[in-house]
Image 1 (cartoon, rainbow, N blue to C red):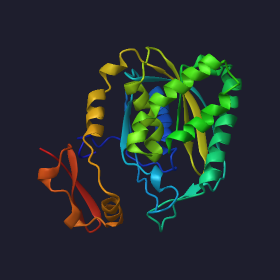
Image 2: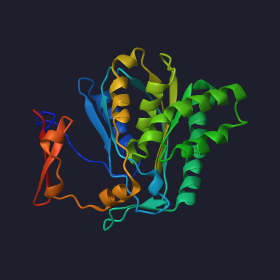
Image 3: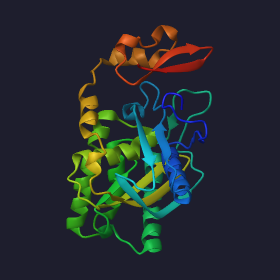
Length: 293
């Protein structure tokens, strides 16, 4: 709030529900704005995507965040108030309070993910009398880029081949950034959305289906429509530049960084800061941030 110069008369809170948290926040923001059309909401999808070194999930790690402003007159994506969701007690992935890294049952998690999608997709079609042919693109939570494809393949042979091929082609555009960034956990679906909007041949008023999943487990399918002129509000060149400016490091360097505990000695020096905000100090375990003048 301080860094963004926001007033005090706002609600600021955190949602924690594995990879589903950002979607919970987005839907809550959507309902709030629907009831208060003169208001806006800021949803930030951010978390710590860490597995232990030399664990099966290590290769799916990533880093990043996605922010979304929700308003009555959206510039990029228009939600159409159609969604289905479900929750179930599932131990496929968890991070105990004592651990800085997550634990997962990988194969089991894949199975639950696909089961949630197939169940919700059937319910969505029945509830809204819609089929896959009503959508130009289907976007998925993608902790790794093959996982969404596992769900999409359940439609192969169930819909016209030409339309299935189109959905696969658009899916490939949605995973280009994830191939570079890795898994954002709760921001994963929305990185896929950005990737598709930046890299795909997106047409105005395209109909999108979005599948969100969070271990534990919660799943949701909802639909949206691309707003004409969205490209004027999405800084594609900045995003591409950020990805191109990354620096490759060795595996030993990565393992050293991974194992470090952040203390004041490791705080970034101001002259090395290239962003608007930076972590300036950790004092009595409180993280203090400052804005670059």
